[in-house]
Amino acid sequence: MMLPKEKQLKFSAILEADSFYNIIEVMIEKESLAFFYQSIDKIAEYSETKLNLKWLEVQKRTMIVASILVAKSFFHPPSP
Image (cartoon, rainbow, N blue to C red; front, top):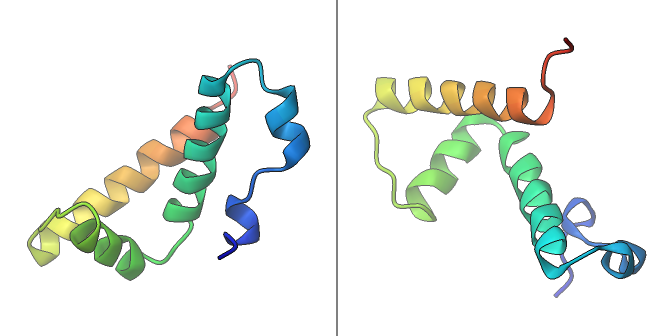
């Protein structure tokens, strides 16, 4: 089974990595980006089924929006 293209690692990226941990970081970044670019309903469904995080409807939306804002600031920090 092949991973979706946005989650695949290029062989050259693996060879160029300084360490195993750098490869893991790239994998986590790809998974995080794929996760946070889904619809809010998909994020909520994933959180409930995979992470076993159950929130009330209002709390769910608030937590997801906060998570998206944190992720966006992490991947796209503001310029100094």
